[in-house]
Length: 313
Image 1 (cartoon, rainbow, N blue to C red):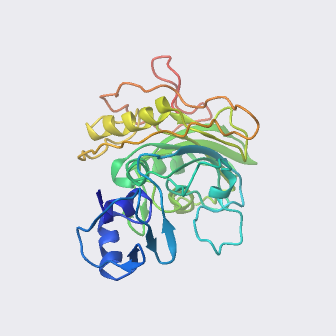
Image 2 (cartoon, rainbow, N blue to C red):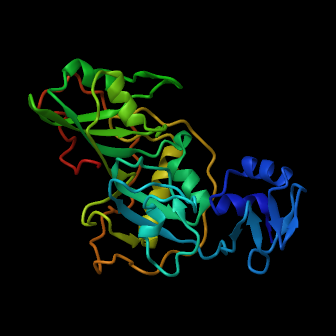
């Protein structure tokens, strides 16, 4: 037996607090009856939960985790009336059940997207307060100035307040256009695009290449596969190291938060319709305890790798 609000959260319907509001509002049915009492427990193996006409049948013990290389023109929504291509429909595993995206990439953006049936996992990876780093390859027109790059590194003011700053590596800078690798920890709505607009540049191409230790290398655009147990554990280990106060090199220290455990099984099918895309994730790393010094105004060389190790993507 599990609490109804936890079951809703685990299925990605809403946070536990928001789920309580849905219950109090009479929008949740259990076996066809409206339930408005907070603290109600259900057996997800035998009972049917209906939220605004959508039936949730997933067993928390059968959680699924996928990685998708999202193409442009695909949207991150579970809305059944959506007419545009949906990311969840690109995952064709017949065992996937009800899955949802971990955070979002806007319609024009491409790259690494996680999908799962585990709401607690999604919360720990996507929510800005947990600070899991996300890396993007960004292209803007023209030769971006050192001053603009430094402002992005230090943080700029958006409608919600000042951003926490970012790690920025200039990969290429010419009169025709500039390519940068940008790593952030907050993940506000369309944050990267809005940051560049704030310093005077419109993003023409945005591709997410990495979340925590998980990269997209080897997975072709439009393809997907199930995450391995090691990959899921590596993502959660990244979250735990940030909870303990460690920060990725060159990024601000994440706030300390109390963690919770995420259980369940892992998607067994490798699932890539091309037949076995290479794994794009690195193994779990130990936490880095010190913050790298912020680079000054970077020329075309960008920031150099520290210690000869592989750069985080």
